Length: 347
Image 1 (cartoon, rainbow, N blue to C red):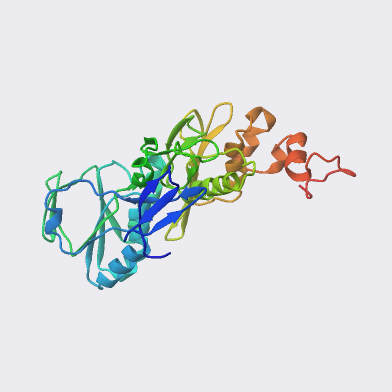
Image 2 (image 1 turned 90 degrees about the horizontal axis):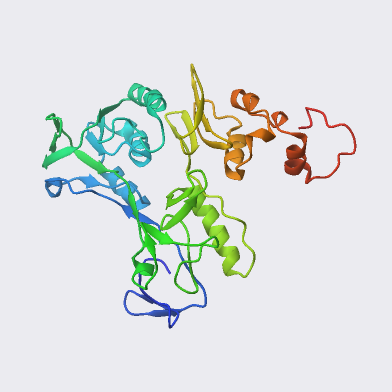
């Protein structure tokens, strides 16, 4: 039912009321309402004629229609959304400037050194930055920054972040901690109602605490767990953690987990790597060379004890040969005894 809005949930009657008053009945309900762009209060924002967000396909189409070859574009937000927008429109405009209150780009994804590597690459591709500042006041097609600098622009894009869409369940009495509170089967605190995706608060195994993880891999996993549970099956144990795979102008970036603990680092031409660990791998940053990153992701997801492998070798070159024989048998052979010698090439 496209173009319709669910306006009210009645758990006692097991009904959802749509715009226009139509009522739908359910036995079990999944709420996957996602998130909405968050635009912080900015003085004079209403005076800007051409301003856009960049979250939905409709947003992208509206922005694309407004672009012209000599356009000066100002993007508020140097996060994943803002920088992906910059990459997408760079060849269609005259100039691109990105501002952010944080002192580095991708502040929730990269550390200082990694952010500097990516920023340099973006600048080579025509993107300029004003960091550690915010918009003090907008006046039509100009903005005064908190640094005192004034910038002119033709088109404004706000890409500061998102907020979970929780009102449907919250208004029906569901518990909220920024996102909807769910258990290990993605059940909300409202009977017969499940939720998944950007609208929920998940348990981050890398952090050991609950938080909103508004990223595609967790939406996929949460939806799968909810679907199995709603169908009466035994869902897999949830393994949620922050993970981002993205590229800008041909530079690949893959990050996951939290950046706490001891650190292994490697920085050479075209490649940047940081691994954060304690008794297990807690997080990693890969820029440029992301080959075999799936091994690091698996270690983090499974919370594999580092004592089970040659971690020094895995740090330098991720390979299954650095794992114990038992671990390889579990992952590759289902614990079956091999018929004969297992060669490295076969691994």
